[in-house]
Amino acid sequence: MAASAARATSTVHAGRPHHPKSTVLAGARVVLPTGTVEGGRVVVEGTKIVTEAPADAPVHDLSGHWVVPGFVDIHNHGGGGASFTSGTAEDVLRGVLTHRRHGTTTLVASTVTGDMDFLAHRAGFLSELVEQGDLAGIHFEGPFISPCRKGAHSEDLLRDPDPAEVRKLIDAARGTARMVTLATELPGGIDSVRLLAEHGVIAAIGHTDATYEQTREAIEAGATVATHLFNAMPALGHRAPGPIAALLEDDRVTVELINDGTHLHPAALELAFRSAGAGRVAFITDAMDAAGFGDGRYQLGPLEVEVRDGVARLVEGDSIAGSTLTLDTAFRRAVTVDRIPVEDVVAAISANPAKLLGVYDKVGSLESGKDADLVVLDAGFALKGVMRRGEWLVEPQMG
Image (tube, rainbow, N blue to C red; front, side, top):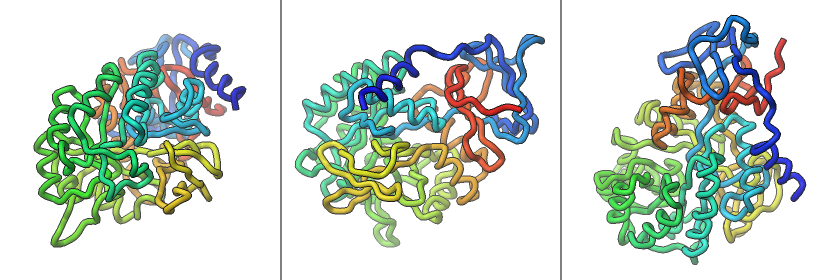
């Protein structure tokens, strides 16, 4: 395990393959913010996308392929056998690299419920990886969630969202906290939402037992994200619509969706897209250690998880415990199974989460001046290439 971690670290930080000053990717279907261009071109110079290339720039023919922006995951607990909540720096980097090789070029590390002092310490540790550019920020999922909807979180460690304790975590993250998931109906929930909004941190409603009216109150206070919509919250009812209706109907809210075929029925996915519109959907993985690694026994915080046939469940209680999803699989399923237009999938998997994080000026679309983060897919939407900041992490086989 230690040897593989060291190899992952060297790939991320050192020994980067040389890439030419200019590269032209030509002939593919290129998905831009304005639509899909047949036989399009993407010009890369160094780490950036540019408009023009020198006459002698090498040209790679990608005819028959798609070129889309690199994926942005705002809710991810680990991968490659590594946990973002408990792993060493080498472990975290191995997990990051696992997801990069599946197209996620921008990734927020999510923690799970733990002791407050541990989470504060962990925030300080992860903030260093944010500062050096390996992560895009930190997401705290728990401990401020409802015991009624705890999912794969340790009930003994749950607590009400006291604004002072919420502030402790965001201070420990040293400006790198991007999102906190809260059951906003709990005592202190609304005040915590206001605190987060004042500090520029996303307040996400999730693992909640809130009513429709309580959810509306949280949105008015500044909550802007639904943590994995439909999961870990009351079902949509015709007399008691609950949080789902409130979150879908409000234009200020972006809804996370886990499109792995386990967490959501295709009809629920379609309902979310039709109700919220493609501009308010963010595909996430909610991945745990087993993503890109395989079946077996794992730890998710203090809880033991068993992964069978790619589905993660708690050993005790059988609750779904995150996913083993990677975003290339979510993309392909969305287009080939759910029949969502490619442009809408690109919005949900790249542009929308980049906008939420406030980094759309750098990533999330294939535009001049942005980082050269892109994914190459074949005609069947299988991943064939990944470029991050002008460097091929997975180089497509040309010719």
